[in-house]
Image (cartoon, rainbow, N blue to C red):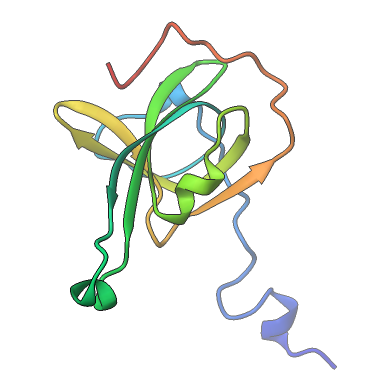
Length: 135
């Protein structure tokens, strides 16, 4: 026999259905975004990792700037380490719990340890490339 708590979906209650955001709705200083976007470009901007005895305790760091977008616009996404391997041009991804960081006065989308990047099926939209929110 299920307890009353189990019937209601566990201690936290039922999972909320995510509200999907469009790129043109993103604003500085906001977080908790869930959106589906297509990766247009990916450019590695930092690759740190030294050989030698001192590097034993250091984890290599890779950062790439990826231009992603949907039918409303584009934005630069900052991919870190294993995220770089997922964010390949032509891939469609769902970003969960993404946040907006400001870098040199322009918006960047990022997913930290509290978020998730999932590869999804091909996008059924055409990316609006003339509305870049990072410019």
